[in-house]
Amino acid sequence: MRLEGKTAIVTGGASGFGEGIVRKFLAEGAKVMIADINAEAALELADALGASACPVDVSDAASMAALAKAAHKTFGVPDIMVNNAGITHLPMPAETVDEAEFDRVFAVNCKSVYHAVRVFVPEMKARGTGVMLNMASTAGVSPRPNLNWYNASKGWMITATRALAVELAPAGIRVNALNPVAGETPLLASFMGEDTPEMRAKFLSTIPLGRFSTPQDLGNAAAFLCSDEAAMITGVCMEVDGGRCI
Image 1 (cartoon, rainbow, N blue to C red):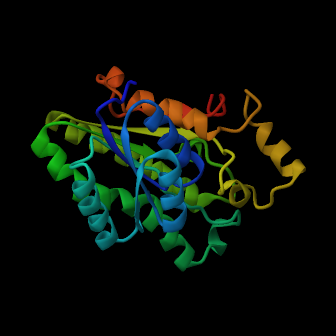
Image 2: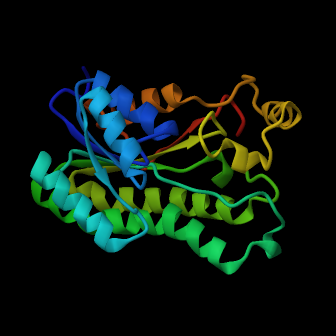
Image 3: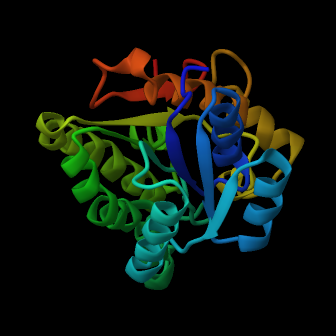
């Protein structure tokens, strides 16, 4: 029960790594709001697990402000904000990704954190405590070919995490990130281009432990970084990657 008495919002929490984080946080005693663009899936999971839910488009300022308002009504200023929602473009040469797709990737993967900081950090500062956890990626550390702009967005996330950690530490707010390798999530097929045994074998050959990240792996790491056990840890971008970045 390392998160007993804590409140948390998890964006993209209705599936994939986000769902793994939601389940672990609940198991550790937190009250959790599942925030997802798929409102139906968020509500269904919330009903099943005993959480709350709120639809959100993390790329939109008004939608994020509405999320903050819903959280405030439900349990006040969250102790923990997990910026997990993310997307990718299909594997292709960098020069062939069209501008609309580029903008979409950066709006969801990067600008969402800007929106989260705008709506949640002022109240965390006023309270004097808070934890923000961002979902980066090994793609931001050791990029794969043909995922150029996704790689770049996750490199941005790593830098933003470290910059925020330094800036917000005097206010009592910790900021960390997780760097998963590809996992069994709805984005896996998009990363690979096609979900075939051959393509899976190619990806797995780059991971020393020989398997993908799971939602449970990310939930376990997130629970530690967001707990008081990690009170002296900020600005860390933790690889949960089976050794891929070694």
